Image (cartoon, rainbow, N blue to C red; front, top):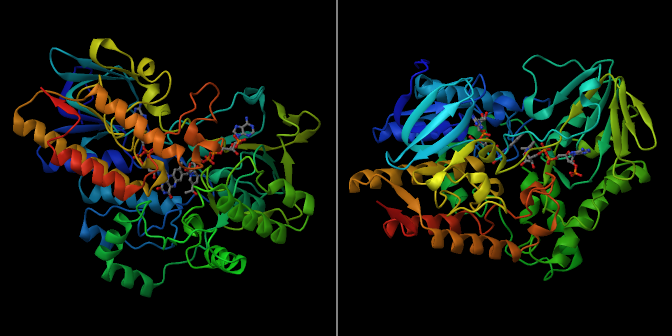
Length: 538
Ligand code: FAD
Ligand code: N01
């Protein structure tokens, strides 16, 4: 692509070259739109480009966590493990970029700083940190829900003389842990995946835990030739089952309430999901009401607490690893691990409670909590992301009347269907707040959104219109509906990134839409069938 400083013109600018941006580009080409993808990183892959930490892998099975748009791609790609490692997912995305000749419209090393809607021209001017400007009728934010690292403001981080790494921007070179004293801060999904691997290699690992979260075994395993053949022979049926499942992946959900069965039956069901093939998120589907009823939820919490107690030899460590009652099971994203709890039985691993004794500062040679000093060669931060809104608000997006998105969202994100924002015409978000997004198999939701956006733009062109914009009252109703559905569940209770609780000062709003993938898809399909009900074409 040209890199001159003059304003480059396209039908559409897509920001981000992860699963979403690349597929959106593919869709636009199909309908004859000219489009360019602007990506901050020096490679494609998004999440899987940045999060290269040891142990990184998906927690949705690879056969589902993959594009469905090409039957040939489905047949030719071989997944090596039930939950593929980061390196393999990144290889897959790069393969897709090459196979569908997408790279020629992707500009790397390009961070978008501003997007301004030009009301008279009905187009967006997108400017980058390199000083380039792009003009396009449509702007698609494929910027990711978990792409802006949360770098905590711990005193002294810049003074540490050892090695310091963030899980969310892990270097490309191999990091050597052997012989080193490593401190790991953060026990969300990233920390939980990393700890067992670091512990195997390092001289000593200290895990600094502020909040214990629930983790369940992935029961990961190699994909046998037979399994691969079997899946590929029936891929269409597998995808169809996934589409009808609440999270966009089939997990044999049990429709029965946890309150309606005997304690033996309950135990057997939980046990089956803990040990059974695939493990992981199947636990969330053990009973129909785990995320709706506090008593049902408590049964799941108690089951996991009993597992921790059985696995972890030191009762005090087991107790510390056990989530407290103010965190209902599953309300913070469930971690899916391989040998996480077992790691704390190793003689070279220590768990430190930094809720009881908070981290005060990183020193030149380690870390100091309120009551102890730790000497460390390496500090690893797995401290999460400014989720769902972070990447959008980092860009200075201005709509009608020069209104900044950050003003419109000052009290939390407001969207219509998680796809569009009133006052911001011709701008679409992929897996935005107010859609199933991070509660679903994201690749499935990405395809759903990119297809819907493509159809909507085709309709605009058929009608010869210059603009499409979400109607303010449709947006208000949608926001109310999203909140109302969330409030029927236990989700808003947990102090999770789903509600922005990990970012100081972020408005507390439960951001994803919890009614599930099939219900959501029905709504957006109906909107389209009713000639884009809730949108104004002009
Ligand atoms: P991303 O992959 O985040 O890509 C967005 C891209 O936009 C990034 O490359 C970023 O650099 C770029 N970008 C952002 N802002 C700008 C800007 N201003 N200018 C230019 N470029 C910009 N989901 C699942 O469903 N299953 C899983 O198993 C799963 N595992 C995960 C594991 C990890 C470690 C993480 C962090 C997330 C995981 N997720 C998972 C969520 C994951 O983010 C999505 O599945 C998916 O990869 C998102 O794709 P995306 O293209 O929407 O966003
Ligand atoms: O981030 P997190 P993550 N001092 O926000 C702690 C996806 N993902 O990168 O809970 C001490 O979950 C913080 O403590 P607390 C997945 O959607 C998927 O792990 O705020 N601790 C918490 O323990 C996931 O949910 C996979 O008290 C501090 C941790 O850091 C999402 O990405 C793998 C601190 C952050 O946990 C984010 O996961 C990885 C401080 N100052 C990621 N600041 C799969 O398995 C923060 N913490 C597929």
